[in-house]
Amino acid sequence: MSAAAIFLAEPFRSLWAGQDPFVAVEALDGEVFRELEARRTLRTEVDGRGYFVKIHRGVGWREIVKNLASLRPPVLGARNEWCAIRRLHELGVDSMRAVAFGQRGGNPARRRSFIVTEELAPTISLEDFSLDWRRQPPPIDLKRALIARVARMVSAMHGGGVNHRDLYICHFLLHLDPPPTAARCKLSLIDLHRAQVRARTPSRWRDKDLAALYFSALDIGLTRRDFLRFLRVYFARPLRQILRDEATLLAALTREARRLQERFVRKLAAGEMT
Image 1 (cartoon, rainbow, N blue to C red):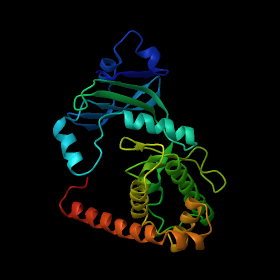
Image 2: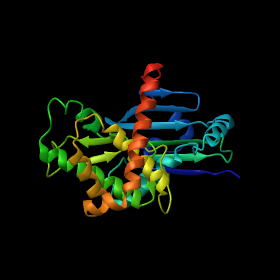
Image 3: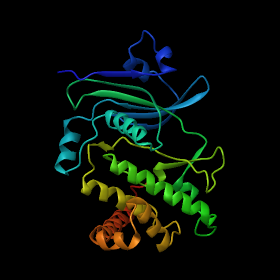
């Protein structure tokens, strides 16, 4: 059975009128960020506006089996990102805006799909924004506002049945127009191609997200009080109750963050990081 779906909004509805969207998307040009046999990612412009394009050409049975053998759900195409973006918007979590999506083919190993999202600009990732915090700490009210904002976004995401699977601070974009202040700081969550959407987020996947987020923020100069502030907002409970009821989870987060750190060091030593 063939699984097919197409969604086109402007400007691509007009741009591709009368064309096969799967042929038209392959013809887009621009700055290429990733070029593999099974996937292509690029930035293109239409009428002076930027868009990011992800094209999936089928991962093959070998990749699917390898992921399943490692107990990792394989990413079969753009549908994950499409569904996650729509769900996050329903939950009030700022993310990208998809303007084109397509999928066809019943064979999961050869399924073709694409997604086009509007560029979020001007923005800066929280990783880059916090790069110099150890030497030059930000205004404390802005830092606290950002921590609370991230906590509310992640809590809403998990509460709404979405887990990210790459929840690092580099995937939160801080909007720069207008300039961020404690009273007005907008963040958007990106890079959702591995995200999963369910009626309810399993604890296992929630905990993996939280551990990844904790790991990615370990070296930016946050204090213990900052981490506790995140927990209080995320769980929306008194801190004493959280520390009592979530003691097992908090210990597991520390262990998982340490494991991620050790893996990062191994990859760095092996020259696998770019």
